[in-house]
Image 1 (cartoon, rainbow, N blue to C red):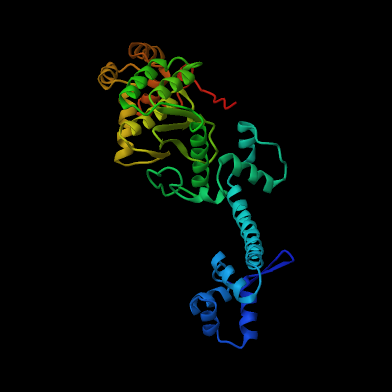
Image 2 (cartoon, helix red, strand yellow; image 1 turned 180 degrees about the horizontal axis):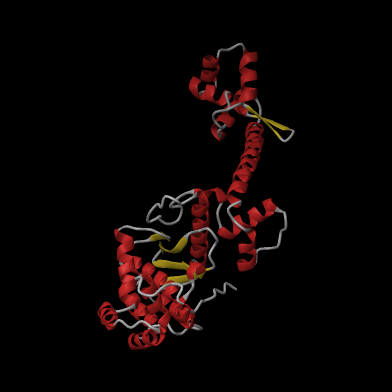
Length: 358
């Protein structure tokens, strides 16, 4: 590090710059000068080279030795530090611009009311930074910034990591606004059973589930997806509560309920983190099985399969028997390769939800 700084037509000198001049003019060696200053030659050398900040104690020693005020020396340090901070801030802003390219500002403007700032990239960055409540957007590049990445798919790019971390940050910030009692697993299990009775209530299920989960200490947040995040959901302990987030990336009834119960499965298993598409492993398999068995009782599903009748009416009849939305049954049959995804006769069973953030 230099003992002076030039930036934006400004120059600031580290106190060590002036101390070196004083030492040179004194005719003393640095070692002798250090003894008179009541410090070590090493400390004096670091100070002269600008590699160590001037302490209040050192400012006092210099003031007594040189007949100056301590404020004089501390002001020199403050001016130098201020210019260094400005340089680092501009350098960090350049790094943030690179991260910001992974976003479409319209997402924040349209979903969360951030101001319209056409072509004002730096101001857009400031708005998003403050909205996410982070010191710099660069922190979004860190895997496991706020939650554990349960696995690391080969195609998980920097863009996916940034977008996923941003979604989790939004969910955490939303969850922290909500007061909830301490997480109670027994009460949560009851709330989950209640949620299963609402799969056909397309208009009102979200506030009903959200309130039931909240009473059990689980704060349920649905977010509009940030394109390219490749996330399905996330769970995180927040103090004495648990945040459960899913996004609207897959808001057809079948995929939404499976994603929700997949994340519930992670909570039941004490496994917190973020779920990406195409993940595998024991924890993911366990969460998948929990979701499958919760949404469609396995014994009843096997009886249904043995009947070998999977037209529209048969699916609707079975869905009524188990008290589930028919789209959930259709999704399971499609996932098991029994009904084709392109079967147009099944269109009446498909329902897509829409997330309202404001």
